Length: 108
Image (cartoon, rainbow, N blue to C red; front, side):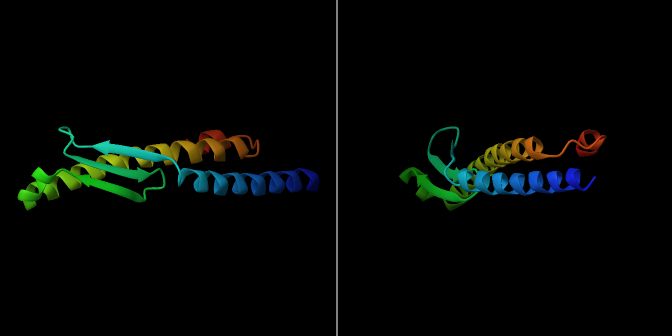
């Protein structure tokens, strides 16, 4: 009985380390997004850290338009980054979960 518990604890610790390593790796995964007309481009990591913003000079003439472009484009990039982040972390976490009957249905 204690061997099973110790084995599960070891597997959980190993999974925690893999999750931490995956989070660090996701800092180097860059998602690029741009407005539909290409006048605004943003780069963001899969951990949702904004890395760069490129603004076409034509957008600098209209503050409201630029604000709209920024909101739309950054939000699209965040959505993509969140999807990549959640998918990667879920895969690592599921891989390392101990085989406990009924746990799969609980996590869905």
